[in-house]
View 1 (cartoon, helix red, strand yellow):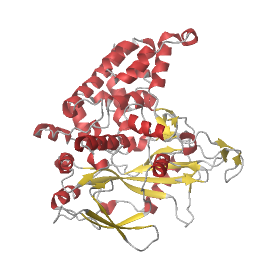
View 2 (cartoon, rainbow, N blue to C red; view 1 turned 180 degrees about the horizontal axis):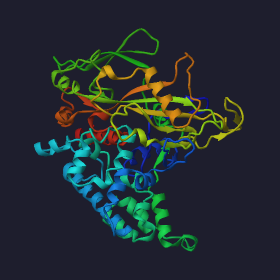
View 3 (cartoon, rainbow, N blue to C red; view 1 turned 30 degrees about the vertical axis):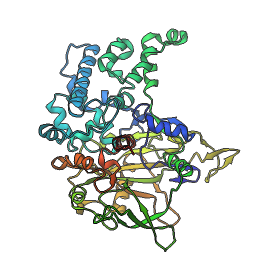
Length: 506
């Protein structure tokens, strides 16, 4: 969503060098650039207090780690780090046992046996505790819950394991490991223990410190600094939508503003081609086109009005569950009374650890500082143009705020209305120190608030539908795409789609 000259990402799309490598290749073809993703800062919610890095919060504030460390009297920092790494290594061993090697980030096409499928359906927190992995549990509040992928008390283990790969930890949670005291220990030993993805490990281990680095900081600190640089995630400059905009310009026969009226797959006569009837834009005259195959990248539980859904499809689509992501654009005018920090990414953990805090705000992002760092602050409320450099008013702190309902056990009748969601958001922001909060209003007088069906998934009893969907591919001359097939991330969807292309030689 572009407001004035600033694009605002209404999602959390970032890119890493290995998992998103094919998307980065597409960006290279489109001549698109990336910008470094700012680190996630944690704010206590107490007005006037500064923020801290997530890893620092995890190590010094999160009660689970502190309580566990108190049981380690007499152990050195390196001993504690080694215990932590042992649990992390065990996590990856158990992950590989259930899902296979994660190096290529592929959906595990072979259906798990009955016992493995049952284990993949356990609530993730129960799974961690069962395998004695309590010490690393705080990592998943950042990687899983803070991104709207469900509370670990409830989300099935499959959806945590498929997302939390070695590379993700390398980028998200191992970039500032003061807990390990890595700068003063044997970095290579720990990295070999963790067995990082080879490309990333190669980056870290083969770099030679400059004489200046060695002179100023010492060998250990220089190693840690290069480690942090190697694990930096990226964001799409100008927002993720720029990828689709460039693709539309390059690819032929892309129709926009299409309303599908009916899809007839001719199940009674497969010799006939599939018919799709639709309108384009404001044109009321329907168009009917014939095609050999149908690829569905839409919400599979929202198609009953226009798709000839078959019984085997209905059995799967009817069991799809969704979390909800609500994104709201607000302004917090810069003045001495507004003490809420203005960091690019701000994480509010007080509303994160308890499933009772559904729909609370615990992540905000200042788009100007994230996806558009090339924009500069300047005079004027509407954003002035200085040559080719647009400027943004310094007193206009416009943010995207995220509210998740990452839990399945909330009855539909208890779900909040749009106004209730905004009132909850405004109350949270004021609790954190914002004296004045203003919703961004659109031209039609409504606030810029979007409610998205987010992370479609299956519960423990229906988790086997993931493999039912794979086996159903091409049965009705239809391919099912999108995050419901694997996991709610661009990298996983793109990887799944590549598997389909290879498997069916498309």
